Amino acid sequence: MIIYSEKVIEHFMCLQNAQSMPDADAEGNYGDPSCGDYLTIYLKVKDNRVEEISYLVFGCCASIATSSMMSVLAKGKTFGEALNITEEDIFRL
Ligand code: FES
Image (cartoon, rainbow, N blue to C red):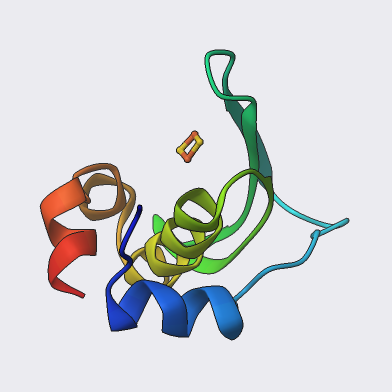
């Protein structure tokens, strides 16, 4: 049995930034063929910062919740800071 933290459940039940972004400055995709999860991330960029971030994700509860958590952490950060977001940062959110 999988037990999720309250934070994971909170994000799963109330997703942050989950939407497409037709006018995004950048779009990236990542999938894990072993489990079938698939994530598309959209960015609006200003002065080397993540001004807006959104995503669409297809996957399990954990992948959906952590996508939401990642978007909260990345918003407003520089590219370097956003690229350095770790699993530990998401765990500590
Ligand atoms: S099944 Fe792929 S991360 Fe959950």
